[in-house]
Amino acid sequence: MTGLLHKSLDAPEETRSFEQGMGHLDLVAMDEGGFGRAVFEPGWQWSKHIKPMVHTESCQAAHVGYCLSGHMHVVMDDGEQADIGPGEFLEIAPGHDAWVVGGEPCVMIDWQGFTDYAKEK
Image 1: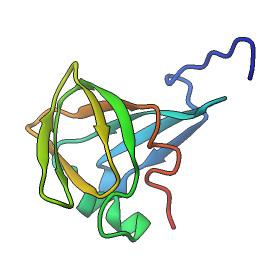
Image 2: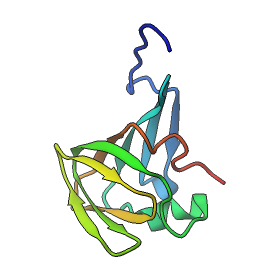
Image 3: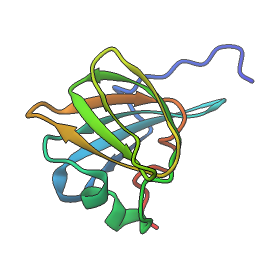
Image 4: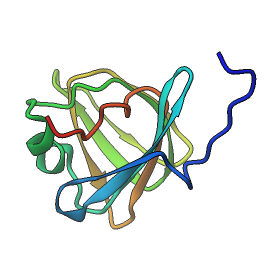
């Protein structure tokens, strides 16, 4: 482990764009793994804009994060669902779909599930 490591999502090491210009993901690598900030544009939905890239039936990433702005609706494969909004922490297990609710981009910070998120397979 590094004694002191600091990086900025305003100068990401990698940026991944979502299908059809529906947002992007900025990533930095930390000793404990990847850390990311995603901007999901109004109209974005995982099953429409990420599924074609990763070829799974639902999102298989586990997410631990925080919503900075906007709103997202998450539906688990078993039917459980929730709305996530600004100021809320989240833990989402693999096996879900999600979409932006409303006309404002949804900005999420994730310190677990973005390392392989939206990577072409």
